[in-house]
Image (spheres, rainbow, N blue to C red):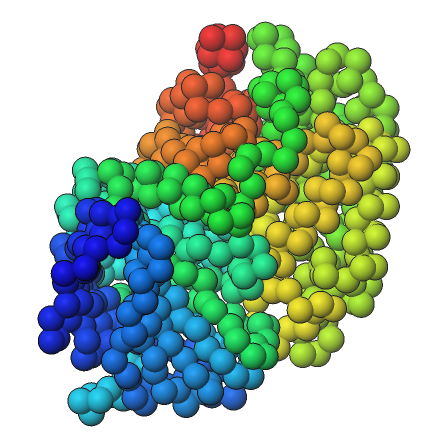
Length: 577
């Protein structure tokens, strides 16, 4: 037995394995096959694959692990012969509380899929194909809202943490885009759409800064009692020389929300996320919000709601609210106040005097945010866009200096000339995705989204230092490109087709956002609502969980139920409380 100096970690060596007792976990590392047993939690496959545009990465020989003791770390390195790389090794870096798993390769190639906790191989025994780890858990916590709603799902169900999605089947998992890159495993059966079993929990979080987040999706892929993690780089990350993957960090916790807190703390400690918001909140940021989208939807009556982003209607709605003591500090003018999304300017038919309207709201002590559709190419020249194989503009390209200059001009027009006070940024989940897409620069995935938001954020603050930027991006590394995290659209049903109370969804999302970005304000959102009763329950809970946002004035869009004056009086009471 050996012990690291000044550490609680103890290593025992036998002919077949290394036995590590850290004081917080027990790990048995095989000296033969590439595997390790994290006692009580998971059998770790120490195979990994880093596919390239040139073909699949398959391990064709595994070598005995190399043990290195360094300070308070124990490192097990598993060299592997690869069909795609000059050299490859999977590493376990163990500290008293954490185990970090990554893969290091050397050579040249453009990354496709990278898998950890498993991959393709021909083992020394002759077994071949795809190998996976074996979770000894019953449930896995997913930090991003999905439809159907299932916060903790069976460990046999997949999870996607991504910046790509929409409401199409199999794609409604980017409500947070990006979410925290942290999964949590529990030993109890999940029960209920938003219920969270008791502990203990095992966290598996991704340690990577913005520069390393060049993939579009991290997928947990279970199959027949096994599972692996797949990072999708989509052929946009070039390796020349040595490359190390993001590390997956394992650590025990008392709850999944503590897992997210640990994830954030780990990123901050490694200089991969800011310790808090870039700017101190201005007092007006915490004032209640009125967003007109719900009222637009409720009034639409078969028309498109975007037709009803109109100056006269917003005045009508705000007047009714004021008559019941509801005077929001912030008004969000929602989709579609602008002529084009990519280079927005007011639609003169809907908002004929927007500058004067904003000034009048300022005189009443209110601020005005404009809804902004992220990535939208409409109104942009193709050369400032991500383009497809046919040269068609797919998304705005923040890696292009010309687009960044355009954003500065837009900010001067909207925040300076018009006098707006910030933006509600939506649709970050429409991040470009595809191996054939072309950008001006080399950034991709989560990192390209961060560059898009950073371009907006920095330009806005140059024009108006107290401009408020609201996003739905509760990943800790995005703390420097947002001031407020919006909890985003409410979903409907669980896996059995039963309705999930909106307020239960609110509490889950709030807990995730606060754990990931504790210093940021929370926009509690409020759309869509299935019924008046759901809306009232949601509205009552909002002030205790963040900045209350009111979307409805006359009726509920989904049910058609009218909103009475007494209902609005209740909301006013809750706001005052």
